[in-house]
Length: 266
Ligand SMILES: C[S@@+](CC[C@H](N)C(=O)[O-])C[C@H]1O[C@@H](n2cnc3c(N)ncnc32)[C@H](O)[C@@H]1O
Image 1 (tube, rainbow, N blue to C red):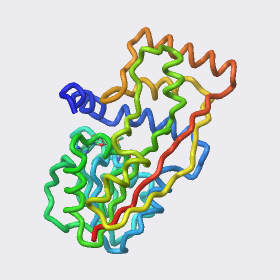
Image 2 (cartoon, protein in one colour):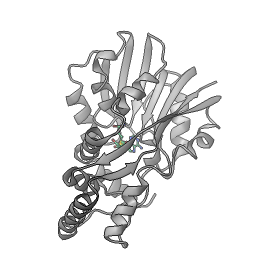
Image 3 (cartoon, protein in one colour):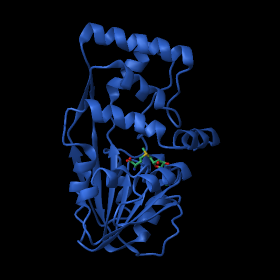
Image 4 (tube, protein in one colour):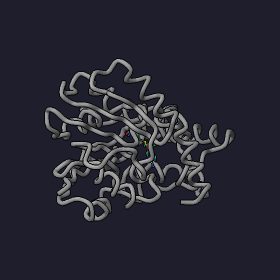
């Protein structure tokens, strides 16, 4: 990962604003009304008494959206590389029973003893990590034997129609998949050296978008390792372009490809 890419990523996740703009689009226009975070929580088949680490926790949405469902015997430790994200998670989960601490840590260099967790969660974050083998070795090290890693990510085709839409507006705009380094297609092979058993689960969903503003906010929130932020004039022209498509077609349909791996340490 180049210095510029790292700086772009740090800027992208300086705080939770960019991520919240993207979550807002998913919350408003997703076809599957069950919801990603409740579905992800359903798959956490951890013991009733468990020490759980989440790396790259962002603003803590997994726990915020499932607040009433967290078993009394779970002890949660949340970490993120970004101090701004950790602060947002601390704020959002201040009253949450079970959340023991929220701290700043790099998934490539975890400040925890070996075998100290029953489960580790990495939700839509492994694709951002420059040395993924090192991070996976760290996640495996932090797990006790038999412990479970939940690694959620996107597929290669996730929101591909959004890329087509943006390039239809301006073919010179740099717009690539954030998740390309760790996808539903290539993730299992990356997990295999560290975990005895790996399984993949898919969450079926898509977007039918009927308003321009949340879609424009989503696109404007993207910058960092693979995409380019639109400048002020471009942003206004892009908003007009989206409005014209909506006036013509009534809705913009975007396919999603998201899911997770569950991987067990031997
Ligand atoms: C797409 S967000 C996902 C946040 C949260 N897990 C969620 O799904 O809402 C990716 C998060 O990973 C964090 N991150 C990126 N690289 C990291 C690293 N090397 N170690 C820990 N966290 C990292 C970012 O700061 C950001 O909060």
